Image 1 (spheres, rainbow, N blue to C red):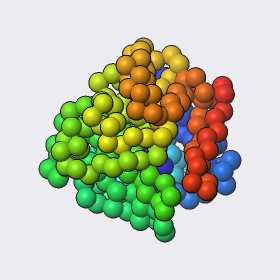
Image 2: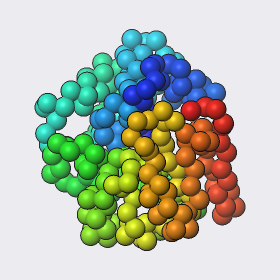
Image 3: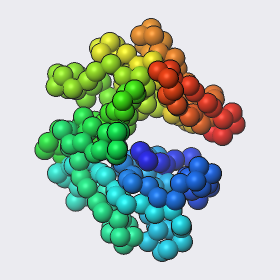
Image 4: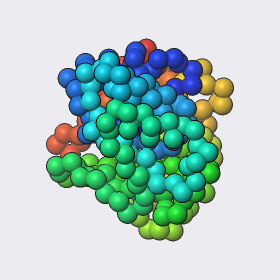
Length: 243
């Protein structure tokens, strides 16, 4: 699992994350990855960890992965996640660029944050992951902006991918042209609420995605999105109304 939270819905863990996991027959998660500690990315995860610590859930989590930040002493959300994981008996790992986690023939490469990142700017220091299987590549970008995209381009760690979890809910200040020219995703998903007050997604971001040849799906319009890869093709399912 990568992130899981909301700022406009309560009890996301109880009413959305746990029911989804159970509907898929998932009783154990190898890991939960936290891109950064904004509430809309962690509120549901916090609930899951609380339930597990109190033995109120049959779903178990083996590991919690957090971005390796040097200044976390005053980051209340970061410290709380670590404490909850410790109570629940979940191992905690802090990841930085260059680290890689393998699950059979699937690997998750950490592209960001760089070693020594402070974490003071939680968006720009968010964990960026590239998921790689024998026939699929996808990139999960947290809430990074164009500042971090430029640094990723300079590091030459980016490559053509099939799927993009669009950064920062489609903000106009993310997903720049230079970034897209390199990764060129076949499919881009923008996660944002129908009631968000920020105007997400930005029409400029949607335009940039479409101009680079991406099919764009926006959760406020189509609901939850499921992406599958079969025989070299991407298949997409969505659930209208599950916003």
